[in-house]
Length: 325
Image 1 (cartoon, rainbow, N blue to C red):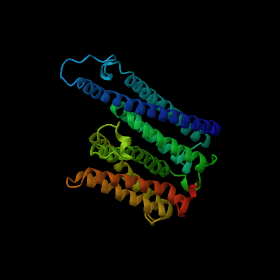
Image 2 (image 1 turned 90 degrees about the horizontal axis):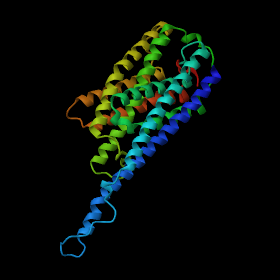
Image 3 (image 1 turned 30 degrees about the vertical axis):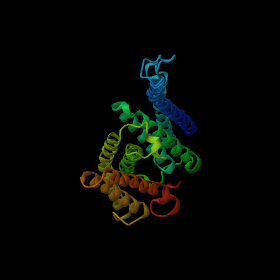
Image 4 (image 1 turned 60 degrees about the vertical axis):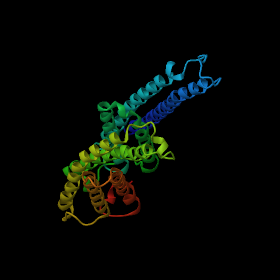
């Protein structure tokens, strides 16, 4: 089962990669279509000035681009649909990898960083498929989501992978399931939430007339207002779950170590993340705070989550270090 899980992770990464390429094709064809349509009026204006008399002008030999069958648009739609179905396939392979890992270990597959990242990323992509099902117009966000999946899973395979081992005695508690499952679920939603947050910041800049990198990446994205609403919805959904996870961790710490809070590095960074995300929701609810300022706070919140996951485990030692890499 362990070998099967490893193979499924590899196949999932490949499927996410091909889905990302398909999304990129959708972007490219969409841009080409926009350029072709926009060029049609320019050719008509040039023709209208021939002869300088204002009289009738012969029609061009080829019809304007806007009147010809828009094959680029059709191909873009096909590429986008292929990308969406490949993402579904990748998510199924991804889930299979998580499940077989748990079967091989005879426990919940959350005992180390590799398994944690494997499960968090699946929660993120599963939540994305739900969003896509409800709002198909957001499909182009899949390019960025699949990019994140490829990077995180590849990093987990190359740097975090460990063989299946039994759960350490310190983790053998029902609080392991309660605390870690809610941390994983909320972290997966926060992972998805940072995608429309970053997309909103780029799209808002594009709508304000900025034409430099990275704002040019957002010209084919949905309107900034919709991206911002999605960002808020995801964070508002995940924050109470994350709050419960932190409280459950404190209760577990009281039962295991005789104290609910000891400023352990992971506890400290979990608190920092909680404060930053609470600050985002407060800023989002305050009319005087601009939307882009509030969204930047959400992005910072996700950076603190990454610090808690990777930075603390690699560079600090504490009571949570027993999970290993």
